[in-house]
Length: 75
Image (cartoon, one colour):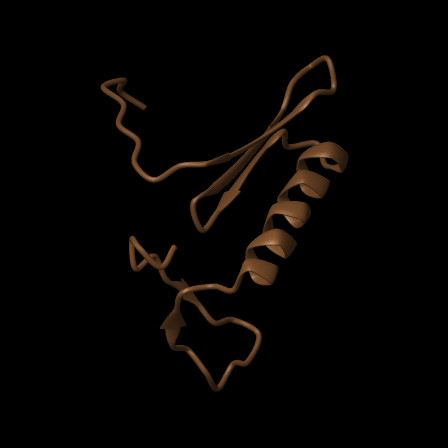
């Protein structure tokens, strides 16, 4: 995150809308939250801040960090 200068908006305080590089603890919390959502919610795919989670029909979970993505498919 530091090398890429990848910043997240600080959303815990409505008065503080600055963006900054997240701490390791914040990234871990976000990853745990996304995995929890993918495991327990109807929607099987969740993403934020570069992290993506996916739940397969078998119940297995993936956690990815995507720096760049490109698709040529029309959506």
